[in-house]
Image (cartoon, rainbow, N blue to C red; front, side, top):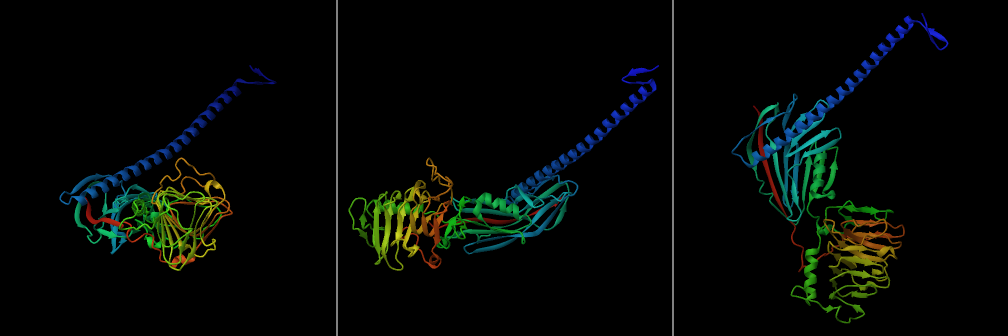
Length: 506
């Protein structure tokens, strides 16, 4: 018997063969899919197991660092813990790098070791000097932060260096941590008028670099040397004598030079803000002078000569078309401004006559310095930037082309140091490429600046502007603050101690 189908027929035997073949193919497809699923699932399970083991060992190393810290501060009680570090175990090494601490009269280099675990894929988890790091290829991640703490307000740097003694192998199971010795490094306790440098030589230098930046900011890290596996960080302020050694000094990531106006701008450790110097000067000057400061004339209340000579002057603010001219040929002049300095298009602050070594110093407690006109020596002929020196507090913002209009001309030194963002443009967002993150803004079409700038952050975005560093400033001795109003001494308290512990398996 045959069954009609289309133009031909299918016999029962052929129909049975087709059914069997279809079932075989279906079984084969299901089997192949199952094998693929098992292979993928197997890879995923292996990866999950590997990640789980890594996390477990990281946690064990973090607990170990805590036990070592506790043991270093309490020498009477050994610490015991059950540590799971897999089948490979870990290695205790006493000398794998070094820490060097410098500041003032302190120059101490301390060898440091490490406790390392290495997985089958080469990933390393390591304890070193109080921190736990994970290294995978070219990346090092901080798992648990080293105990380096910097407080800019109290100018205190604390660093208990916890290190191991001897060399041994550790396996999973009970471990005992015992305090061996503490060297308080009493010579490294007080550093005056200086910053503190820490240089780390270590296989985990990338992790140290990342942590130093977290503690002190982007400019804390001054040098990274992959070849020698070292990182060098500086905490505290730079020496104020170095302020004008370059055309532009700034200490944040917010630097923008749209048309390469600045040659070799220098990202540096912050210079000290002058708030604690300028504010008392203003208070004394506003009261008519004190024993520390004798005011020759209050320009806000009295008429004055067309050209002011040497002496100390006070004015509440400088606005728009105000014109002030000075003759410093016979001596220095100081102008103390309580509020803002706004030099309009028709205004100016000018030194008409001068002698080598003399200067006009302007100290302002205002929130802004806007220059649409001129702050110059003579007719802005680039005579010398040292003759006009402008000092503002950390809260001063600077715009040499207010509102993006016609730019002004500045010939002199500008120092508005800050060690953090001070919200200079709150409620008054600048227009153009520059933003509220910038303290000093130059984005008008034709502003000129001859001299040097020290600020937190700078933005220059105008093809028509010109900036030129006065090279004579490199050898110039600039007295930034009066002798009677010195900066408070920069005192960095160094709480540094070297703790040695023994880590042993039972």
